[in-house]
Image (cartoon, rainbow, N blue to C red; front, side):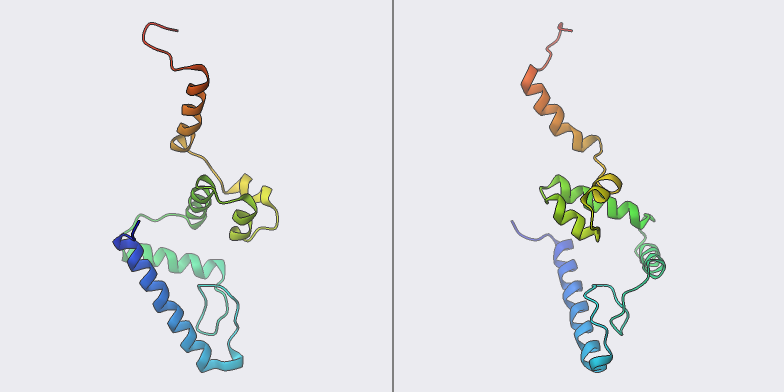
Length: 134
């Protein structure tokens, strides 16, 4: 299975960003704060939540996208990962939580489409009602 155009563009953008960060790190030397985060200032310091939110909303506007709250997007991403088999302890780590229960309680939100698989499984247990049966 190959990458679609959006995946290729995303990978290219991330590689370009990583190269830029490497140049910034080299230029600043020991003054660069190697925080380990992806989205950082040119000094390596992590953005605050407020800074991230402002940048994300500005980017959504530039791209003509519907404005989505970052926590809603985060919840969607974590739900997607959970529905695709990512173990709970990895989800919690991905979310930056020390407690798996926090991640599951606040961020993993199944929707109607997510419940269809369970409904299909249930139908297999007791059989699907046919016309005329109650």
